[in-house]
Each structure stands twice: as C-alpha cells, then as structure tokens.
Image (cartoon, rainbow, N blue to C red; front, side, top):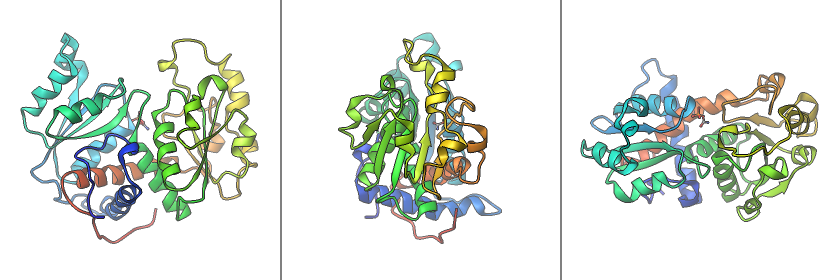
Length: 316
Ligand code: CP
C-alpha cells in the first residue's frame, strides 16, 4: 500500500491496518527531517493548509503548525476569538468562506462530535480531525502508536491499559480502536461513572480496579479528568480520585519491569499522575510530543496525494 484510500482523516475507525502501518512507516521516515540542521523539505511547497481550532490546544495545534512548516506549506492558523464566529457565523459558512480561498487541507478541532465529518462532506479540501468533542482524536492515537512501536518494536500482543476519565476522552476511543485493530490487548480503567459500557464493543476489557488494570501491563496511558465536559459530579473528590486512580511509583511495581508510561497531556500532576512517575525514565510523555510532529507530517504528506516514503529511519 502506498497511499490512503480516503480524501480526509476523520477517525481511526476509517483506517485499515495497512493504512495505519503506512502512516507509521511514513512518520518514521520523516522523523529524520526534525534532526537536520535545516529542518525543512519542499514536499508541500505551493500547498495551503488552514488550521481551524475551535477549542484550546497546546500540543496538537503547535505540532500541526511545525509539521506544516517543515513540509514548506503555506499556512493560516485561524483565530476563533477574533473571527466572525463570535458574530454568529456558522461552522459551515466559515468553512465555505475559507474554502473559497482554495486551501488544500483544513485541520479542524471542534467541540461537537462529527464537525470534521460535516466539513469532509461539504468541502473539496482534505479535512483532518484534530479532535471532535468526545468522539475521536486520530492523530493522537497514531502518534501514540508510533511512540509505542519505537520503544517496544511492535504493537501486536502488547497489553495497553488506559486509565482515567474514559467517558469524556476522544484519546481513549481512538487509541482503543487503533490498538485493538493492531492486535494489542486493551484494558480501560476508571470509576464506573466514567466508563461507558460500549468499550466492550470497541474491543476493550473494562475494570474499575486500578491494580487489576496495571497488573502485567506493557504500556500505561493515563488520562486527566475532563471537568469541562462534566455536567454533574461524577467523582466524590479529587483527593479520593487520586487515592484510587492516581498513578504512583508504588502502583507501577505491578506493571511489567519494562513498562512505559504515557499521557496525551495536559497533565494534572498530583491528580491522575505523580511527578516522580511523569518524570521517570520509563515515561515517554515527551517522546509522544516529538512523535506528534513526524506523525502529522506523515498525515499531511499522504493526504496531499503523495505516496509512501522510503527515507533513512532514525531511532527515537
Ligand atoms: N493531546 C492533546 O490533544 O493536547 P492539546 O489539547 O494540548 O492539543
């Protein structure tokens, strides 16, 4: 396989195993660009990318911008606060007006699930989902998979535990879909009020017992509590949550000796993860961020109509 079959990247759900491998292989090849003295290739010269972020972002927005610049694209990062969205313009009207300027790719983050899918149907440009509500965050799952594959050499057969606020997490959904597709064993863990039962259907085992979730895990992925998406009290107190579901050095002893710890960010230290775990040698949290640039370069490259790359591979 040398190219993606869809115009857009809307979710992991739409990707085949071959397409996931193609994106990861391309990202691995493109990682080398960020190690050069001049961190730029002409691959997207003459292409225009618009970044449309309706929700706050540190990592996703900045790594898309870095990725686009490293590929030499012309970019426009649209600021919602100073746009006509504040005057009541709809998402679709905003998108149609931006499309009239002939972009090639639109990257969108939106609080509503399905917003990128709507743009995918209505727009000629390729649409990349940078997070839609509580639905999917496909480039996060892809960069997480690249990080795990780089450290462990494979995805198949690994035990991945995703722990925290599963209910409100698009990262949990996209990672469950991806790792299950790639033959890993996925466990999700959190308070019963924060785990939807549909995760069984997505291929994950469900537990509310943190020790059970960590036992024998190769990869532990911690998630923050998304208070901004909660309309009611779903946990008694943050202190109690930490006691049951905070990742500490003591709890890490239950995992495999060579287990790694991940977090998509933003982290709440002392709530879902202790600092001495987040900053330990087995933490790959900053590797995830670095791999985010290469992964987004790969997605932009493949959606621009280019086929798979054969470049010198570098280690993590
Ligand atoms: N992982 C992630 O989506 O982080 P941001 O919200 O900072 O983009």
